[in-house]
Length: 391
Image 1 (cartoon, one colour):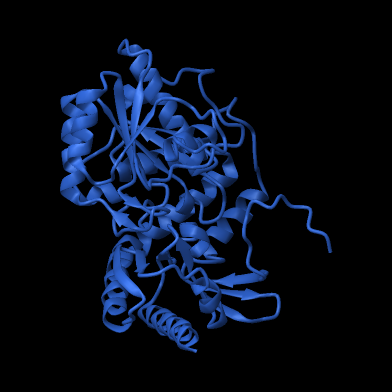
Image 2: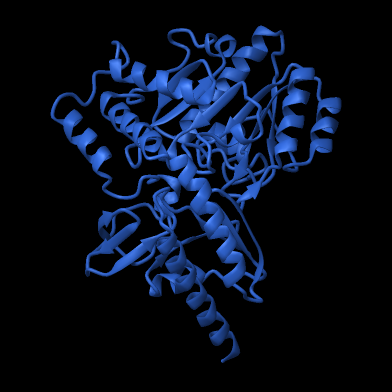
């Protein structure tokens, strides 16, 4: 059968038909342990009863009205996000890219108000902020495929405070810094807490806005609601998405009051952003994480997973195992593009990012037994690869 889809994804030959908790089943009834959770989306796992009930309830009543009218569920969700993040106001959209687009627009509004008509934003090498034109410009400002990209970004090395100091010294128009507390697509690279504190101090000293992209690291994944809370600082703008709706598309850009109020009617918007269905699902997600103490669970099971990966996953093919909470990266000594398909043979779903880092982003409900099972299957996959190399 001809497939009338644009060829912009490398898809594995597998069709999932059902999910439950940390498990997925394909159309042939084969079961898989899901250690990637839709790239950090299904934090509560698959078919979580609280999310399913919320979706069913809302679908029976009202899906959409547009942001021309008050949406009480949006106001309730915004209040909850503000209470767990320390931010002051929320703009809802559909994805992490859109949330970062809103953040970039807020920076420019703020800069123009300060008399800076050509504002620059510092972004980080190996960072990832989305695939829209503005967020791609922040992610890969030198990419020729889509030239000309949006101007106004300067990339510097990640977790290198001296590089930021040098950029501040050389660029009078610098207006903001955008970074991920943990670079997910970049290979699970973790910013030290003292680095985030140092960036915050520089931003305060030089009147720069600090945008923290928590699209992948947020909603409990690292053991706190948002990863920056480990370091005791607060950003001026923070973006969140992925796990917020557990599979229902929703993203949000949160900001401090003096920044948020720059968005006046007509300056920015989103047709579907924060509609009743998405908000009902997100409220169910946050209430479940809180009720079941899943931030604490992510920290505990993340430590267990990381510790036992280091103990049991010995292979000359592995350079380093690192992680925070349930964001774990296994950096390979060589390029092994077939590690994902080999793990699939053992019923394990993983992901390879930054070419050489196996990325594990399991649901926050992962148990110790499931973590042990993942390590066992991953060990078998590595043994397969080594055996084939020796053959």
